[in-house]
Image 1 (cartoon, rainbow, N blue to C red):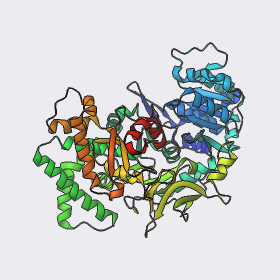
Image 2 (image 1 turned 180 degrees about the vertical axis):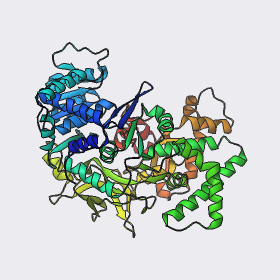
Image 3 (image 1 turned 120 degrees about the vertical axis):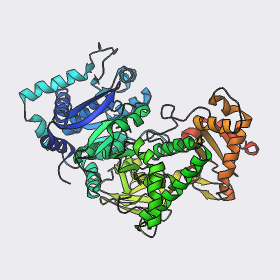
Length: 600
């Protein structure tokens, strides 16, 4: 694909002009910008940074939650040939300081007082930082010379634009495919964070591949809630949406997702499997409170939906009787899910972790196609995807047209193509460990292709459990089985070099209350159940039921309930809601050791 990301925005501003481009809900109010305002915003920010001395190849750090200023700043930075370095808002000050220092960022754009204070804490450790720009200056100390407001930055850009009206476009036109667009820092659980160097060409390779799949067009509507600092949302939800011309609405928070979806009625959605699992678990929990006859109707409908979904996957027509049953099942059950997601959603991406077949079938029966895929930061988000007309549930789909995928002799997935990064910023040794001399990215994931060419992810190479008896076990597969039960919010399987498997569990409090009430347990609030032996007996029974579906060496022998909910804020979850296994194991080492009394 020709051009660069800045040129795409400029072309879309000319094409769509005053048509709405992006809206963001803040404090309950939706605020939007047109395509022309989007471009002008990027222009003033880019030239404002240029006035501060930022030049092609320089890095600009950005710490903010999703908001209009985020995307304006991002396009302003990369349109002048500079490089955006996004930070997750949950990062502590010392990690932000490391990323600013390692990337040698010249400017740090902070959302508010909290972000500003983090920057000020580490200022002495960041010698390259010349300016801190604050978006929301409310209650901020703006007295330091290094600090300025986002509005003042844009005024600098406006003044320069008046003096040199063609400068911004000329800077944009000088950007090549090989120039970096962003440095995304990956998790530092096994060492310091690594900066994946993603070029304009890497992103454009993905955009071109997605465009060939005819996913969406300019009439589509998306409601976005994943953080823009995550490469999946940034590339597929931000840059691809910009290229296609999708109407994009950013939710206020995770708490307002359902309300915002019902208000804006999206046609396409980007999510992660955990979001789909939570929606499904909530539905199951609600069903269990219904009269027995309604529960029987629900499960009958689910069975019909699974049959319909399977035939669709096999590209077979529906028999007349099944079609009639499905119409009844849709009206009685599945239409409610579709309406809960706005009533117009055609597809929903659920990529990044294994997804249970029954969940995929359920959404599919509601005429919301769940697109499973696979990718990572180092290949600019996706490497494989199921397609609307060529899919197989339980797989990550087939390779995108921009890359090739192969399986190494030990089962590791290798990826090579235009979307694969050249390496990690200032880390040549780590680059050599991740990318072969002939350009193959060694993913660290284990997988296999089935007879039809669909990729199946079996586990993380580094997460494989090898028991004391020599059995190789993929914990994610077992965890997925247990999380089919809505009682389990999170389920972490442990047992490397041990005689048996154990688990650390987060309990879904809403489902816990329902189960306890059904069992005749009295309680004042569900939290108190977590330490009670009578409730633990219910959990043990639920685990025993799932154990019947596993081989003896795969079963969970003991468990411990972790009363603190795993979250991104407390460090156990990634922004895409995947468990950081090593963090959890280190944090709850005492609970784990208590489950191996003979091995302490």
